[in-house]
Length: 219
Image (spheres, one colour):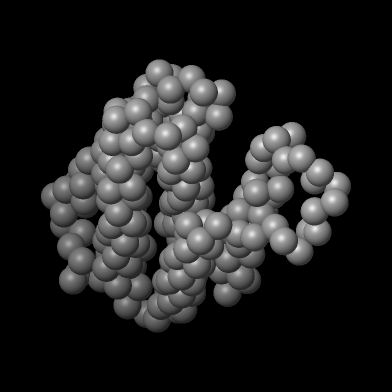
């Protein structure tokens, strides 16, 4: 339970700092008379607020899942299953995907849209590879006889990886929309905003996966 609370707190602090500090630091040099502007007038964009709420809900979902995992382990029918080695490779791949998003975001802020397109393309490629790797991990487990109905530990493994994968697939829709804006040459500010949102969400998914993978390794 303590690990769950620490995970929730870390996610909320990280995302909260980005949502608010990013607004305070973006284009501060372009605002005239900023010293006269009341701080209370600084508002959080609706898109960022929506992302924050969505991430909060997902954090609660996975936190409850982690708590249920620990509680279910106390029953006598729990039999830990081996972690497929490919999960290590998948972890490295999702780190690369998150790093590619970060590179695309930085490139867009520097108005280098060519590098932003490359970074975004790499981010999507690594994301698809991660999903393929997770499916391969499922295949390896089933070939070894670890079916979801065989043991509660097996069921949790498939549930955890499936839920995370579904949220990543959802993120790919946002990735595709952002890629479309880049290809069409939309307004730079809109492209940057979309990249910011995608990057934060991908960093969040990386954090969630690291927490889940650590949970599987620890048990």
